[in-house]
Amino acid sequence: MRVIKYVTGFIAFIAISAAANAQDHSEEQAGRPKLVIAISVDQFSSDLFSEYRSTFTGGLKRLASGAVFPSGYQGHAATETCPGHATIMTGVHPGRAGIIANNWIDLGVKREDKTIYCAEDERIEGTSFGSITAATQGDYVASAWHLLVPTLGERLKTLSPDSRNMAVAGKDRSALMMGGNAPDMIFWWRGEGFETKQGGLMLPALAKFNADLKTMLARPRAPMAVPAHCETRNRAISVDADRAVGTYRFQRPENGGSIFRASPDFDAAILALAAKMVQDERLGTFEFTDVLNIGLSATDYVGHAFGTGGVEMCINLSELDKNLGQFFDALDEMERDYLVVLTADHGGHDLPERLKQQGAPKAQRVDAGLNAKDIGAQVKQALSLTVEDPVLYADSPFGDYYVSLALDADTRAKVKAEAIKQMRNNPQVHAVFDGADLAAMPMPQGPVQEWTMEERARASFHPDRSGDFIVLLKKSVTPIATAMRGYVATHGSPWEYDRRVPILFWRKGMSHFEQPLAVQTVDIAPTLAAIIGLDVPEGEFDGRCLDIDGGPGDSCR
Image 1 (spheres, rainbow, N blue to C red):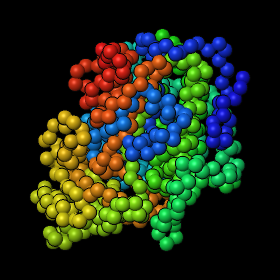
Image 2 (image 1 turned 45 degrees about the vertical axis):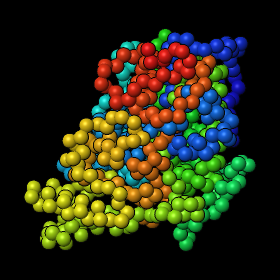
Image 3 (image 1 turned 90 degrees about the horizontal axis):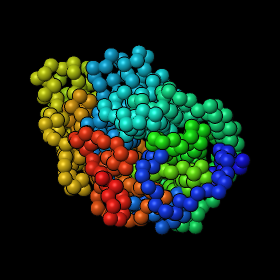
């Protein structure tokens, strides 16, 4: 036995038997892969992939030697974690999948808090959205119940009932939206360790894995070294009078586990647990194909906490590259025949304070008054309404807005019309779409990069869950009015920096090629389905199969 160590120096993650006389995989693999691995790197935009591609020497370099689609798209407007992950292994747009956002409002739900989290089951008595946002552990049951369509792993079981469909991620919504409603094994981070409340199988080694992780997080860690190519990004950017970002190197004090998620260590741990699942459950060793879904979340937390343009993101991506390389090396030692696809649930934009210094003078934070409460008060004043309760509800400055169901139909119509009018007059708002108009539209077709804003909004619109109207902010308007610890930058817009993500396929022996034309994340599931021989009825995917053969052959046939 020898220990495979991830290069962060963070923890000796897994023990794997050294492969004796490993077979030569230099020739192109034939037939169906025994293991399909779908990796989503949260907030890994095409911009980041392009900016750092020349520096990759590990796992990301390996993936970039396969089939590379640098202009992948999350086509929809609601570029958030839950909708983005829902597209990857279902092959359908969020509006069709029912996952319209991370959170939405259901004014008809029985509980007092009307905000619904995409990965909860609010039918279970005692659940509360407030507990989800207040802490990493809350009184809710994580569930893929809101996902209305099957994932690839779920579909595969109709072809091979013995096939395993497994998932591990930093966020419950990432694991659940890729694994679906019936995973065989699924894990996500829940504050003090990885856990699950779904799946038919448990990993015997999980308790020890979590205990070792806890022990390591209790130890201090010196600042990470700054790679040479990151030095120019090692510069402080003031966010406000008391806060700056741009120079943090992921040092960890004693018992500093609270900063674990926003560090490269988080993804290292996720990949280590994924490797443990492959090893202990013998994934990819039987006649059928297994599916392992991996949601890497650190890049998203780093982007939110420090922005995408500083030394923090540079170090993080360098470590991600190394950790992916170690993960693939471990799979090679286990002699697995695996096919990997890597993409992202959405992109991201840097914090406006740094953007203004780098040629984007219009970058700004959203006005604190752009919210359902304040706009609703203005609507009541304009219409001379005397009701005390709110007339508008929304989870954020952008996206879905809902009109109170306590109003009569005529008043609701007037409130909606006045709210849309006021929103359209706001200097930070790009467009406002009536939900009734979106519901009447078909799902968009044609080149995704040419979709109108209305078509982008339609792709993430579901008539039973989406708002009475949808608000889209102007380019470079960050929907965070006041920066705070861990939240200085974000995503969620319909603009290219949030929609464009890389899509990379890799398998030993495949021919390298790069296709710069636009494709979509909904193309991933039909591409994988064709390769593993899964016949899906016409019309059940919104995407199309991508031929990743790279030669005269056609992987879609």
